[in-house]
Image (cartoon, one colour):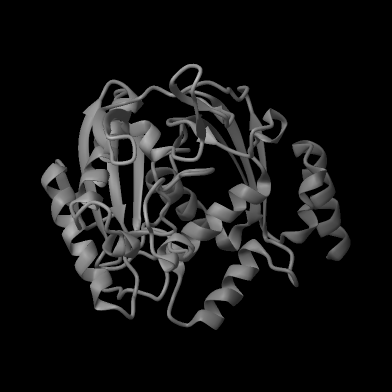
Length: 344
């Protein structure tokens, strides 16, 4: 029986030409190839274009995150055991192998500004006009005095870039892996600033999955779907930049409505660290770490339009003020949204 299994695996390796995947790790092999399209600019690696690539480890990391958001439980020990079975750990090999083949080259150029808003600089005693795309992409550019503008210093895969995703895994975990991929493509993204709406991508093929039901699921101690999750859906647009601008402005307005300018306590509840020039930011906010519970995302509709959405995934928090702050944010965002969904 063992020799027969080895023969089958060897044949599969030759036909698929994927020896590097280590097919001998799998008992019942599932193989999928997906053709993907980048929707919003995808920032990967650093300033060196040679490091701007879709890596297996990065892809596996975001799949692991969405798996945990979907399948995680309050039994942390059991959850980690199951997670290690699928995605691997320092002591155990992964039951999923990924290969990504890019069909486009990364770029290094400025992004469109998107919707413009005005800010007042106290230090310079003057008003500035800024684009919401720069607001969302903070850290990807530097201000150049000679051109009097922000200049992007990070390479990215532009909208409409294409890549293929090859997955091989033990079929025992097929629904969990494909469901994680579905939620990644519909609510998340790849690369830096994915929670700000960058790195969104679509899959041309249909994913056949059994969607989980979160109606009776309580919040967990980490970011995960629950009965308290919400999806704010916005309007459709002809360009990705307009869709991202709309949700970016809604998020910015909600965040700034929490407290007066130059105060950061409530905004620190939303996300930290917070960096701002010429501002006296408390050390626990400036140096702390806490990812926001919002996921900005742009999808491409079947008729070729672009639609923005904001996913809210709260988690248990010891401070009641955390929920008060997010309740305030949600009320502001809801006023801007086209509809609010509670089912996914």
